[in-house]
Image 1 (cartoon, rainbow, N blue to C red):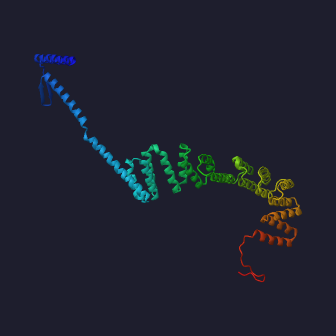
Image 2: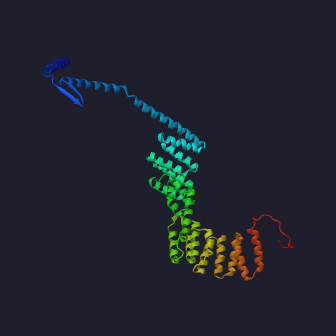
Image 3: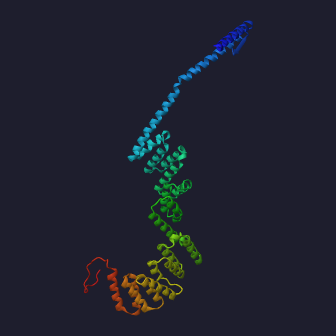
Amino acid sequence: MKRGLLLLLFILFAGAWLGEKMVQDPGYVLVSYNSTTIETSLWVLLVAGLVSFIAAYILLRLLSKARIPTTELRHWGERRALRNAHRKTLKGLQAFNDGNWWKAQRYLSQAAPRAELPLINYLTAARAAQEQGDDKGADELLLQARQQSPQNATATDIAQAQLQFERGQFEECRTTLTALQTKVPKHSQVLRLLHSCLVQLGDWQGLAALLPELRQNKILPQESLLALELRCHRTVLGQSLAQLPADTEHETRVQVLNRAWQDLPTQLTSEEGLVCDYVTQLITLGEEARAEIFLRDQIKRNWNDNLVRIYGRLQGENAHKQLEIARKWQQEHPDNADVLLTLGRLSMRNGHWGKAIGFFEQSIALQPGADAYAELCRLLQHLGEHDRVATLLQEGLSTTGSGLPSLPMPDKSATVSA
């Protein structure tokens, strides 16, 4: 109450003082612009300016409280555009689901700039373009997706790699996926697609390097991984010599082959297929003696009937020593047809013809096989026992050819005709 009274007294005093000043000296103000002039007293100009300021302030307050309609109009326009984009997106997805690729691409690409999830629109539209064979259109849509959603570059790059793979652009696909793997090394879709791409390219070296990632992230079943691993390393081993120039020296070839074998994972060095491949390549290089030593060591560490059969075909530096080694195997595996076949062959290398015949006959008795019959017939033929050879041939045909179908046969008196 006192404060209000004091304020009123101050205003009255100020008004009286100001009125007296106005009476004493009203002042003079002249404003001239071009041919127009305004003359007034100083006090009238000050009062007019104060009134104008108060009026402008009140007007602005009123306008701010009234909310200018243009803002609402702008918001209404945006909501309408969003509804339109949503409607077109739904139509595009329905068309895509129905296989109407042209309509799907049109609706989805039109709605993409204002869609809630523009990346989905662009990627699906790119897929629709791809289905129409419009590779250029698909790539342009993916480029727009990158520009619109740079934070989702990984998804766009995966879509790009998928389209490249389907087009058969395997080199481009590998480039895209290799860059992606650097950014997202454990992404399952990237690894799975990279695996398929490398298989198509026949890049077994790259697949061998990718195997740890495939295994760690469980991209393939364990059985498939093991088969893939074996295939990769068998191919790499087989290509180790084929990649060398034709004029490469013999010793260099041997070193390259040995290095390729040493680079194999330890757990694969006892795999029968890899061992046979390595031995075959040593034989091709004329290194049969090295192959014999290697194969002997393999059989010692991991017994394998097929490797024993191959051992009998090898000519080592000491045929007598080979025969003695095979005799020890017979003591450990007395009823093994493959050991007996190998003993027969090694006996022939040592000139023990009678013992060779005995080993071949024992092998046939345990397990009739084409190799044993062929070796025995060949030996007997050279020994002049033709009648026995004829009997064995008939016996071998009836044994090894037991799966032949029942067919009509000519009489003995029949003649051969065309």
